[in-house]
Image 1 (cartoon, helix red, strand yellow):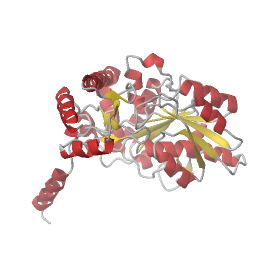
Image 2: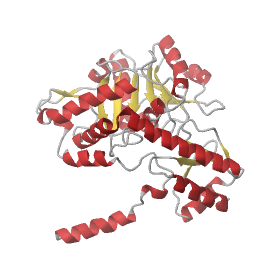
Image 3: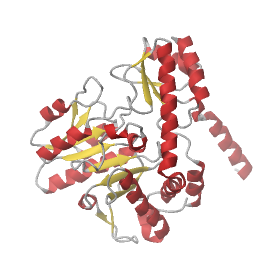
Image 4: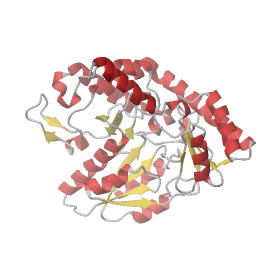
Length: 373
């Protein structure tokens, strides 16, 4: 095909994709323009063979320090992953490998019922049993349920800081105490909340990161509220020795070993994250979160004014509305051009107020929501 024909074909396919303009179901958004600029500059960079790309590696090293500092501990160890799924796999794989070397064969981990579906993949890939703890009335993991599920084969407890369905924050402080008492690994899945909670006005109410001594590992996703390009995740360990549990020899590369799950790793997404964090800084990220939370409150207030109650009062920029015949309403909203989703239990309409959402978007959505129900 000619260059013009290929470009025409790409435009045709792009027009079939949805823009984020009326998407209220996704935890991803448009990357910041400086992230897109940096991504394009480092397209050929491969952190899987980082000796060839020392400049890119320097950016990753600094990012680990910057993200660690945001999460309460500058001296942490990890790498930029493809996202929350890879980070969660690697967290559990690290503690599984350590306990396996110690002679344990039958292993289980405890996650909340609201845990991301990546933990179902983990059960299959890593051959560990995944026990699911029940929730309390606020849709956070029930600490008593976690304690009841712990047995001699438990190796890890998982807490969620920003659940995918409800945007709720599990009681990580209490989980930290439990895991310390039982000598267990505590992994905090903060894929969404990691770049929201530190910038909330009420952030002091929520302890979820390395400021808690029991937290062993945290995952965060810059390609969500970090305004970076897809795919960009990050996994951070308190101790460097957990990266050793993941390392394999790479004799024919410029490095002697590799701890990442994927071999080839995009340096472009690392450059994008580095650029946007340097450009925005913490104050820039705070301004984005503040605006998302303002619009979240606007949406909830508008819904309440129409007699529609939230399932829980939003903790972050995730709204769940309690309405009758949720599935029918979701279909009707889709017919009006809106992309929304629903939660499983309790059943509710789920909306994520990302940086692409505007005040005008919120007002238009509320009008269509009232019309639909």
